[in-house]
Every structure is written in structure tokens, then in C-alpha cells.
Amino acid sequence: MASKKRLVSGIKPTGDLHLGNYFGAMRQFLDYQEEYESHLFIADYHALTTAYEPEKLRESIYRVAAGYIAIGIDPKKVTLYKQSDISEHSELAWVFNCITTMPFLMRAHAFKDAEAKNKEISVGTFDYPMLMAADILIYGADVVPVGKDQQQHIEIARDTAEKFNSRYGQTFKLPEALIREEVATVPGVDGQKMSKSYKNTIPLFGSKDEVANAVMGIVTDSDGEFPEYVYEIHKLFRGEDELKPLYGENKSNYKALKEALIADAEKVLSPMREKYNALLSDKAELEKTLVAGSEKVKELASEKMMDVRKKVGVSLN
Ligand code: TYM
Picture 1: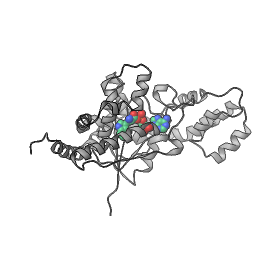
Picture 2: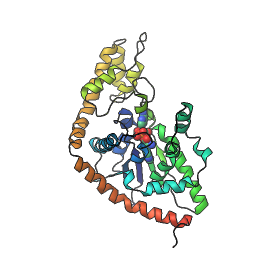
Picture 3: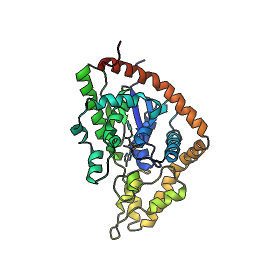
Picture 4: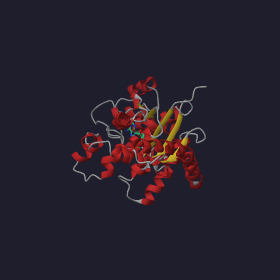
């Protein structure tokens, strides 16, 4: 039997997971867990670019771990681990730093956005795409399922692989981004991309009331008949063939439509929420799962790094 292709992706442990994470990326992780040999990790070193409270960061790490499993990822089939447990990611990122130019990284959207907002930018934020390239390339990933906001990062990873290969000889495989068009950018309650930093999220594992409050806060146009932002989120939960008549019958009745969305969301979210809360009540078990996962991938990462050290000339034999 031909061996399975490899899938690699990660989530940053900053704040709570939301519907954008779930529909844009995590559903793909779930749908592909049989087809690919999957490596899913918690990008805790990436989180350090914005998360400065150690206790909160630790809690978020557990939450992402619980989140993966609560949506149906089976840790027996998929390797789950923490980025910081595999120090080779950061080591490889340093090597990539040395073959990458500043002007190249200055083209990254995340950097340009931060600069446009006159934010004080840490070197880690600037260098973010190199650690991400290392996360992906170190395992020879074939595919990287993500939302559209990560597309440029995958392109940067490909460019970095090509650059390294042309300088030192064939070493890294070029990965493909997997982006689902219909959920490439899940909108938040204000119609912009759902994002923790825009404070427009609907929590994936929030209580029924938290979800209901977020849904009630979806912005609607006071003189239109059709609440577009409600519909855009509703269609994540129910087929458009059913939604269209419902929205037709309830023109301008935003409250009824939001209530219908809350009920439809609850059907999908409540079993996952239950599992999530149960998982979080046993943190030692979550930790065991992450340690076991890191032990599985450590060898692959360390072999690749040995090869890289030889190729660049820092290893003496
Ligand atoms: P993060 O933690 O911001 O998001 C995790 C995943 O959720 C997707 N996503 C969305 N998709 C559609 N619509 C949205 N509104 C939406 N919001 C978030 C993201 O695209 C992502 O797939 N840099 C990454 C983490 C990372 C990573 C990696 C990913 C680090 N190394 C290597 C893949 C491969 C991030 O911050 O994702």
C-alpha cells in the first residue's frame, strides 16, 4: 500500500477558538484525518508574539488541545503536539532567517498591517513566517489546510524551500495550501473576517448563552429586508436550499432569524461543547496526549535537522 501523504497544520493558542477556526480550518483537519498522515500542533511559540501572560497562555494551550479532540480528532490517528516541544522548529527557523531578506519579509500582509497601524513590531512578529515555514517544511508536508488569511504564509514557506534547495541541494518538499473556497474567510458579527483581534467572534465552545449573545450582536442593516451577515453565518450550519425559503418568509424579522440561527448552531455546537468541557477537566490526560505526540514527531524533525546542519556546513561530519 502506498504510504499516505502528509498533512501539517497548527493553531495559535491565543484566546478562545471560534467559528472561523472551526469552519475555515478545523473541519478540514477532521475530514482528512483518515486520508492523510496528519500532524496537528499548537503554535505556542507563535502565540508569544502577542501573548504576554504566562498563565493565560498555558490555559489557552490546554484549550486548543481539548478543542482538537472535542471536534472529533482522534489522537490515535493524528499526531497532536506542542510546537515548543520540538525545538528543531525554532532551530530551522534560524537557518531560514539567514537565507531570507528583510525586503522579502516586509511584503508579508501581517507585517504591513501592523506597520500601517503604527504598531511597535517585535522581531518575532516580523519573523513569524520563517517559524511557520519551519513548522511545515521540517516534516516534508504535502498539504497544509488553512483559512485564506494564512495563504501568503504558505507561499512564503514554498519560496523559502525553493531558496534553500537551490542554494544547498534538494532538501525540502514544496507544500500545497488547502483552502475551502466557501469558508476561506468566515465573517464575524460585523461582516469583517472573524478574528480574535477584531473582537467579532462567535465562540466555538462558548456556553449556549455566550453563543446566543454573540449571534444577537450580529450587525443588521436597519432598513434592509435581508440580514446578510446573519445569513452568511447561518449557512455554515444549514443548507442554502432550506435557508432561502426561511429568510424569504421572515423578511425584516431579524429576531426570528437570529433565533433560528441560535437553534441551528446549538445542535452542532452542544455535543462538542460537552466533550470539550469534559476534556478540560482532566488536564493531565491532555498533557499526556501532547507528550506522546511530540515523541512521535521528534525523530522526524531531528533527522531533518541533522541533514540541514550537514548541508549548511555547521556539522563537522
Ligand atoms: P490561527 O490560530 O490564527 O488560526 C487557526 C486556523 O483558523 C483559520 N481561520 C480562519 N479561517 C477562515 N475564516 C476565518 N475567519 C478564520 N480565522 C482563522 C486560520 O486560517 C488557520 O488555518 N499562523 C497560524 C498558525 C500556524 C500554522 C503553522 C498554520 C503556525 N504555524 C503552520 C499552518 C501551518 C495562525 O495564527 O492561525
